[in-house]
Image (cartoon, rainbow over all chains, first blue to last red; front, side, top):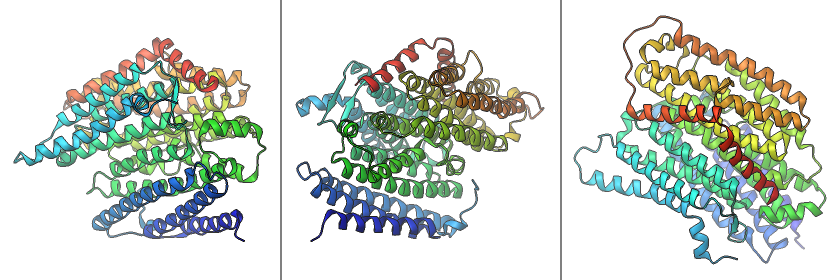
Length: 102
Length: 484
């Protein structure tokens, strides 16, 4: 029997893998991919909570659709920006983008 | 429950702003098709956008008395949302005005620039009204995604692209974490509207899942308001972004973070966590690290970035008081800080257009070349530093007064010491303007920049000398937040 906890644990694992990737990746592209993992964790959480906790309003499942659109927009923007950066300076490794230091 | 068409009339300001952005793009497209010189500057597009925002401001004022919730609690209209909407519209108009002149190389793409600023303002306005977790997220994205494009607008400038990439990665990560927090809160409480969350929280004990969700939510808005420990991106992004965008980022996006934070936090006050201490420590660290960072900067944009971190600290002092008057003083501070910071950036843009430099050492003797712009920068910096008769003094006075009333004497002491440190680096710039000898060629100030500076300067003086109207508006907004 699959319960709410199974979904939540799966989502938490995806979240941690994604976050680990974000914090350790050196390539901006990989960071973007890892953020997608985190967003998928969010989607699983939303759908599971929506079905198990508040099935009548179904806010969660509706929002999953919105979230996919937003995530697609974010990725589109990220790729456009990476291409621009690549044309102007031939780099996509974030540890080499150090013209300004915080 | 109101009829949906009636509900839409309450959203008239937002609809006007959205249409303004679309109209600017369409008109520009038609104009480019019908002309043989698509690269000529088109300041009238900016004027059109400003007119649209002005119309929306009129609509906001027309709806000022309305206090209601729409669409089953997703959108809320109250004096707080009115206050922030007017502030965001004013900021949007001033930023549009000062972005006409710095765009000579991008004349062909100016319509998109103006439209993105308009839509970003739309996101900010909606954020002031949003009262449901997932709506809040969508509004946040509506403000963040245009900003990413705006920050990287100077495509050929590697600094601009780099700043844009840094901001993009930050937005991606912070919103993903924020969303995860939102789903946890939604799952733990079974509802996503703020009003329902408040009701459920009052009866429920704090579970670990809920606590984790709230902490993740806090990080989400910490990035937006540039408070320590979420501040490390600020100097780089502020330096690399085109200056009008930096000006927009330093006020609009920061206040949007506060608008969002206020709604969430007031509902969560019943939770047995020491919010005074959490926000007090964040405030003290932001003020101290911001000011210490600003001391060693040689670039004015980076200096203003660190000063912005410190100012976020002063704003958080108002939040840490967690009283109605504390929140009112925070709102008052946003208005005072907004005018002063936009004034400073306008003057910086005027100087940069003439000298091409953002280094403070290149400001030597500028007072003789551009007396009015130098005077404007002086007023702005003194107001940020908190000198009497200017807006910043009253703002700091109220914030510290109500924090002291809430018993946060240690925080007030930290704040006062920090104000003195801050004066040092503000005065250093002013000294550079007036004392050393430099070249004597006069700098001409474009009438648009002149107008923007006059509006902001009048705002700074007016709030400093006659604080009552703004103070009353902030008190109304704060009491709606607590009483509603």
